Image (tube, rainbow, N blue to C red):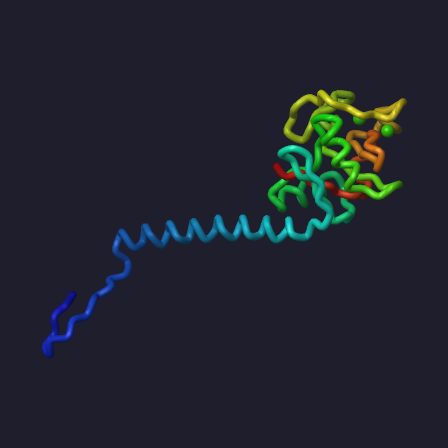
Length: 168
Ligand SMILES: [Ca+2]
Ligand SMILES: [Ca+2]
């Protein structure tokens, strides 16, 4: 408070003091974090079909992309490309698809041919390969698709296939 002639009191705000600078930096940090989570939520809202099993939710807007495009799309929505750890999750992923449709799942052997792992680098324990698959056709199939029956096939990572994301 500052007393001035006439008996009025003014509160002086002195900008640029260390405490204020620190607080502004904190607020800027919080604002940045909020923008990031808002952007993820906005992207998540674009997903129209949702199926859940246990703690996992699977979602898609039935738009197509390459495997890399799918990884990016799901990450931008705060999730990951769909991966089934068991039969029930596999069924939940398949139920996002209409008859005759296919989607990428996160299972791939991009690192070592024939050694399938999920996108987190964990070896695959549950599989649902179609008989005769994975066949690494033309020596160029390192990603995996699931059909509406829940059956898997290895396929080229560059084709455009429906993307399904998972959120936990
Ligand atoms: Ca392969
Ligand atoms: Ca194949």
